[in-house]
Length: 610
Image (cartoon, rainbow, N blue to C red):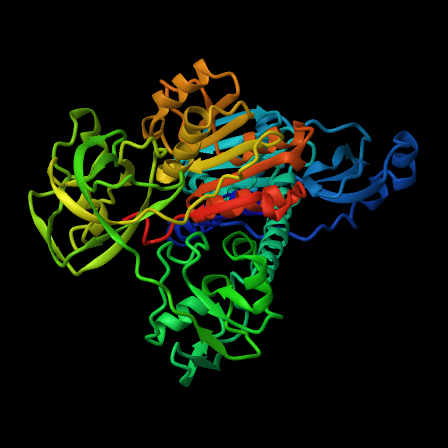
């Protein structure tokens, strides 16, 4: 989990700087570069005629014992010695002195000298407007460490000529266009401290982030490959698989090495039911394999030890890299019951609470955490939610009062209440709006969400889902949910506290994007206030001015909870939410050496959220 989070933030940093590079590089290419000033060729040094009048270098060095180097130069047609008194790697950081080669006096360049010097160095087309001595730091020349004379010309480009006061050498020529180019160079080379060099900490830090991005990416990739969530190769290899149907007839099919066995069978037109969409929670996609096939956590929950020993497995939990044939198993068709819609209420901007009443005469027996199957007939449904409360309208995209056509389909939703013998089933159904005008909204959610109160429909008998143990005396229940995945967890809490009147510790970690998207928030707060054995920890990822609780992701407070817990071996974990969240939480639990048999997972799938 931590690898994935670090990889995400490193990627954001590197992507941001990459966009700065591309933008500044493009603008540098488009920038208008002004024509430089014309330099006057310098005359060669020739002091042979007055050589006898020059001071010897030895005498000059005796007067300046700290001198590191000495050079005879032509300064305004007069001989002078340039002494280096302090060495540095870069020329602009070194310290120099000028000594008159005839008198031995130290030379200090005056304003008049600079005017004369500039006139000798450049073919000026504009007069000098201003001349002043500037001490470092010099903004246009960030790497300059010596005082310089700034000579400003009265031309259109506002050209500035910088002359070093210690040597009379040119430090730089800057105009208005050059200032803009310098800004782009600063951004392009990350020179935010204006050092004037590539060797600075921003580039080193960026190089470190890039290296860490590569390490976390490779680590994450290895983890995905190990968990068989990704196939590595030049192509998706195809392989042959022998499938034997319920009548014993064998058929050879071609499957992808990257698909699950369930997907491969369904792609090859083998009818095999899976109401949870491959999450491993319904236990219906049973197939018969070689008993040596690996056993997943979900299979240990859904299948008995005798079935596992005989080779029965869940197709959604197996890959196609099998060494033997697959035997399909007959799956019974679920019974349907008549239910009447009692109420349909928005409890968040996108989640509707639907309450159905069983119309039969016999008692309705179901376990908390179960889910039911809804069959949606082909036809038309409204493309917008009816009776949307005013307080939720701002969260919805604009829509037209229209309908959309859809084929017949099957959807499954978790029951959000305990069996209180009243025959009432409550569902938290998230209505999925269309992402654009060209797409249709969620078929199941819009069809059911727009049913009129009093409508009678056929619903599959509640089954599957979470299973509470019979003995809870020495157990602790930890529930982790996200979004509309709170429904089966709410049913478990309802059963534990109001059904079984259990006093075992119960902790709920519930994550949502915004405080207003916390379904049943008031109900959980009321239960927490009344029952001391229940702890409710809501977490929102997008902070709000009205929210005073925890922000971020569920994994962080859960990590703190686990690290402080003293008896994790007696805890039972129930997870329901988006697949990415469930994957991160599962990895976190396994990192704390939680027994796989103590974890039950109900991941979302396309069959449970639309």
